[in-house]
Structure formats: structure tokens, C-alpha cells
Length: 304
Image (cartoon, rainbow, N blue to C red; front, side):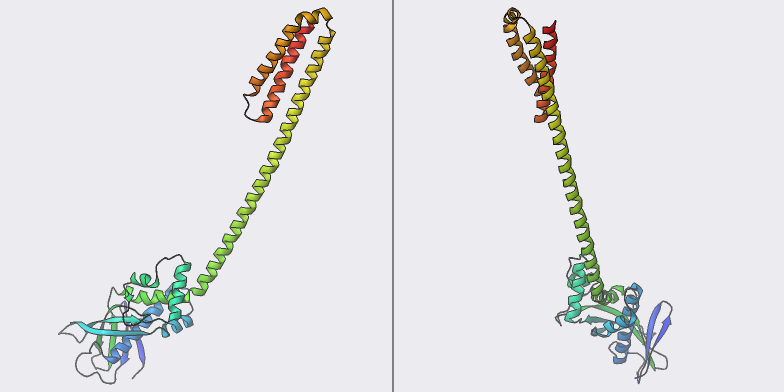
């Protein structure tokens, strides 16, 4: 068996393999040499696709492809051209990744929030679970084979619109090779989330502390307002008593019923006025402010 070489024809990549003896005018779709060329071509296309992602080094790519069992089975001829030596073929393209590869790929799917199983993920690339092997997946590959005119070389080419067939093993290997990176990204995301949660907790605790300090300051301010209002009320009472005691006995006896009625009126009016406030401290302040005001007015009245 000769040396494998790559020939670029237009937009298609075509592999050629020196054949020991092709014989006849055409190559059978199941020709052993032709299938070997096809396998090399598929591997090259997978390698190219993985390289284009720019995430993996070439040695890792090639090692991963080499470790992925690939087979072409149920090979059949789909079309022949009587005027050409090219034959058009299709085969069941089966890949059988290792248990570790499957586990690594599923781990990455989970880390990246993809709820699909690997089976469902590959199904999106038209690859189904194989009935022939536990970890096998398979799809239909369309290709063609053609011998050179001198019958010494076999050319293989993957038909157009077969991107999904190449992308299934490509994405499987990309997932498996991304495990370390995905785990590092997950760890970094968790670290950032923990930092954000810690910052949020600290901000909440700071806000609670600020609110507690504000409430304490407001409480002290309210207590001071209450104390001031009570002090003014007491001062007004002292002034009223001073004026009342300054009246002669006959005058006090004469206006005593009126004074008692006024005391009740002051109590009732100031209570009613204080109830306009919702806060208990403000009710107390409002009551004593009213108390001091009415007492001052009464003191002025009695003085006159």
C-alpha cells in the first residue's frame, strides 16, 4: 500500500491512495483501499473543523481523532454514471467514543447549561444512537470514489451538504476536549458569583446598620422633641399658677367653675389635636405643644 497524499480540487478536498491493483473500470463502494482513503478524508475534515475553532492544539486534536473508533458499514451504491468511472456511494458512518469521552462530553454539556443528553445533542447533527454498540452513534455519509485513468490511484470525495455528518464527531470531540476549560470556567463563574453574593451581603448588612443608626438618631431626636414640649408645657403651667395665685381669694372663687371647665376643654382639645399624628412620640409632642399654647393664652386672659 502506497503513501497517502492530499490533492485540492476546486472547493473539495480529495484524498488519493496509490492502489496495488484496482482492476476493472470502476471501484466498488466497499473497496478496502477506497474506504481507507475515505477514513483519512473524514479524519482530515474533522481535524480542519476543530482547528478552525481555535481552541485546541494540533497534537491534542490529532490524538483525539486517532482515539475515536470510526467505521463505515452497510455500504451501498446509490448511483453510477455509465459514462464515468465515478461511483456514488452511501454508508452508515459509525463512531464509538470511549466511556471517558462520553462522560467528558456530557460533563461539558451540563456545565454549559445544556439540558440535552449527549444522545439528543448528536441527534441535532443527524446522528442517532447505534443499536450495534453501547456508546456508538451513527449517521449516513454520502461519498464518491473514482480511480485514476491509469488505475493506480483511488480518489475519494465527500458529497456536498454533508456538514452535519462531519460536525457530529467534531462537536463530540470538541466537547470532550473542552472539559478542563469548562471546569475552569465553571470554577471562575462560581468564584465570581460567591464574590457578588458576599458583596451583596455586605451591602445589605451595611444598609441594615445605616437604617439602625438612622432609627436610633430619629428616636433620640423624637425623645428630645418630647422632652422640649413637656418642658414648655410645664413652664406654661408654672406661669399660669403664678398668675392664678396672684388673684385675690374672692376672684378665684368667682371664676373657679370657669377655670375647671377650661381645664377640661384644654385636655379634650389637645388630645384631639394630638390624634392627628400617627406616631406616638409626635402625638405626645403635639399634645404638649397644644397644652403650652392654650395655657399661655389662658395665662394672658387671667392677667388682663
